[in-house]
Length: 269
Image (tube, rainbow, N blue to C red; front, side, top):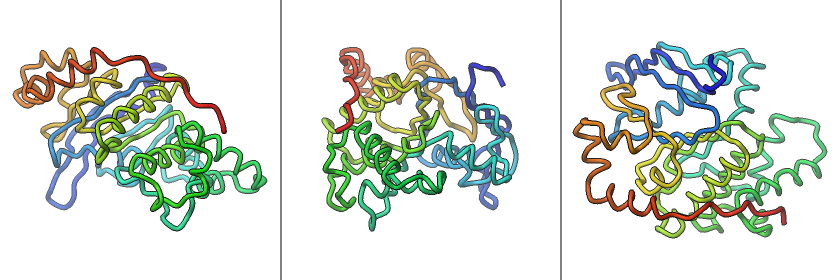
């Protein structure tokens, strides 16, 4: 795999009984980029992400992640893969019976058994600070947080193992415009400051224009284009024309061109 690529997918096929979601899907993800993934409802965006991280096993194809076979079932290889990425699911998927601090500690305890509890807690608090949450948020349960803070708590947990790749599934869904814009800036800051590769599944045009270096389009069971938005705007595919050049797309493009620089990361409380 080229040094420029951190994920390489070839010939991917996903099917559920007679329903084929992906057929001969290819995708390259460049190291250090923020890649958006878009497509119509039911096009298989989340299925694609779950295939990469091992929650679904495709019926055909190959997935290489930083030189490792993502379809490997060998335990030590799976552990290495799981430490290389962090995931924020659409609803956050936090453990409701654990505090934010305990949620962030879970992957550290699972993958690094035997570390002193005090050290694990200190690492978890650092991740909470990196997600731009106040120190006191660590003691709260998910039900005690706003929607935006729950998403940030999920980001903190995704950062727990110092991953190279972050996956976000609809990260701004359900947020008001101000909270969504703040989350976009957090995502951009984390990527640029920590050198992370970020894959974002989203319908949010503001997110696409604000943070994404390139966008991959899932349609007709495969990736039909992967390019910067400026190039996709020139694509003659009818769905892409409607998506990017409709009223909402034009408004997002205008807002994206006027957006400011990302804020600095917070320091540990």
